[in-house]
Length: 302
Image (spheres, rainbow, N blue to C red):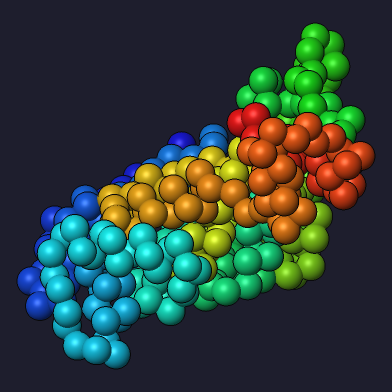
């Protein structure tokens, strides 16, 4: 169960004790505040706090020449302009703080995004729970034959069953040894900071993760992409649902220009122009490598 009874009681208490505020609030985000959204088998995300909304982005962009126009249409147009022209500072005026429960190996991918403030549950002071990520059978896949960091076809039959047993058995055995090493009944007990080295990478950890909207969009552009690893992509998808309710105009522009758009090199643009003029262009005449050409074709063909 991702949320314990104690955590749910805390969430219920926080949501029951609403406080008046003079600051701007986003109604869509208020509906998410403190609520836990389940991810994977034991994970979740929940919003702890946030600052700003779509209007805050526009306010920051207009600060150099006063309040300016305030209509919804003009605000949406301005946000789309800012997104289209890669302006970053106005989006940095919005921030979100998330409580995330995730497998350690996912956390090690996630922490590569170094533009956030992070405070992680410490296994030096506390004992980690006996919770491990075990993939659903259809998520067990072989190594991709065209991508060294991706997965290919799903495993089937006896091989899939054997892999699942290994994952479950190894995780349980490692945790048993961890618990035995730190136990102080009849022995000194190994220090927690040392015993944790024996824990598997699929054990769950937790952290608070605070990030501004500009850097959050960068995270989501990479991790909510169809090519991202499934186990981090489902977290990014859950965050996308929250952000869409928090800053709908900004998220719509992000979907259009970042998730739905594409960056083309000078060579790729030249190829498009040549095709529009009726010329037949091939990889050999494009000036691109085979890898570049394959990516270019995937953009054009969808």
